[in-house]
Length: 111
Image (cartoon, rainbow, N blue to C red; front, side):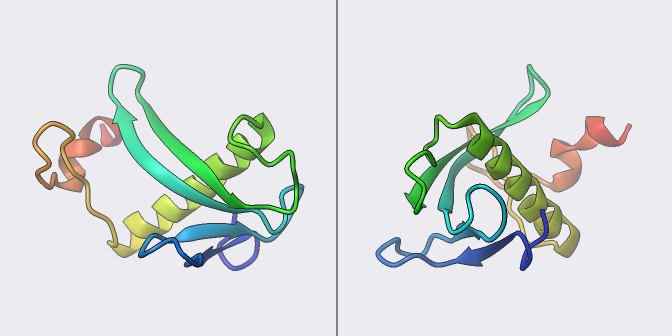
């Protein structure tokens, strides 16, 4: 997924300060999704996330739709890659709420 081609970041009306993503291509064109919690599951060595459908012209665009889940995952990976590359991120410990350095969170991935 490419920002500006396949999706764009938007600030939906009545959504406060939280950004969302409008899908610009594919089956869910013009669907707007917003990500919720994003966590690193150390046991499964996986990234877990949830998302919400803000709006869509497609009645089948629900959080239970596996195709939309895959699109959301691809968008999230693209956004995270950009954030990590450009240094626009903040990682927090779930238990303490303290900011954690990138190197500490992803140390096992680099090895």
